[in-house]
Image (cartoon, rainbow, N blue to C red; front, top):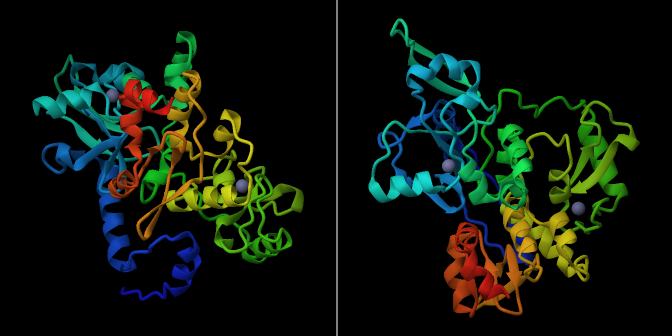
Length: 378
Ligand SMILES: [Zn+2]
Ligand SMILES: [Zn+2]
């Protein structure tokens, strides 16, 4: 099916923020996205279906062609029966550019790994029965690599005392993990338990009415979204999408919505996340700013770095800062304007910002080269 869409309204909507919207064909892009996603749900062989240099780890998490991926070894050898019984006894899932991946990149040795993208925490595994030698396939709830947790400082793993690190490992939830970094990627993997439906038939009308009554202001952070109404959502507080009593509903901007429990597979793009922070800044929501407010308002993907900056007592970074470089305006994910230091997620904008005199780090570089990063920021 060929879809033609009129993007003029979208262009007008983003024009005040100086975003350029690339023209694209919805039909071509979405079907390609879906087939790649379906392949990744099953697992693809590293070195055969997907090459290691096609996986970008510069932001810490692993990006293959716009999809968030993980690496693991399906072959559990003689341990297969033990691993099917308790996945935490098996081989680990790599979720970040950790030393294992660095070793593979440096040596070119990466046999037996699969690339996978799914959120249910189950992974296809196989091995051989140690007694009979027969081939045993199955699915197992493998544990996450602790080195990866440290690299990302996921849920402050690296900042926590030893005893509490164990709980982050044990309670690790792949769905929450994907949601934390969703703004870096085109979409979330499809989930078998995904509940995109379940709304009542009159939901659209109810939602529209509430958003109008609020005059398109977020009930949590107060940002005014009159010119960007699509960024104001209506959230069901108790998670029950058929419970449309007013006291169960809350009008929230996409960023505040994503941070609520029971939000259910909400994918907020980086552009939307930045647009909301640009507006909050323009509307003086950030005039008083400290680490508590940073935690409240920043993209969840930046939490690991923010927490590390706080632990090292670095000056608080600013959100929603826009910098002009020639004819273009660049929105910065995290900015220290006094020192002109930026953490930037979109690598395409790095050169532009550098030419405006800024020192630019990717999220991955800021985490890994933290010594030199903190010297620039102080
Ligand atoms: Zn790892
Ligand atoms: Zn809000």
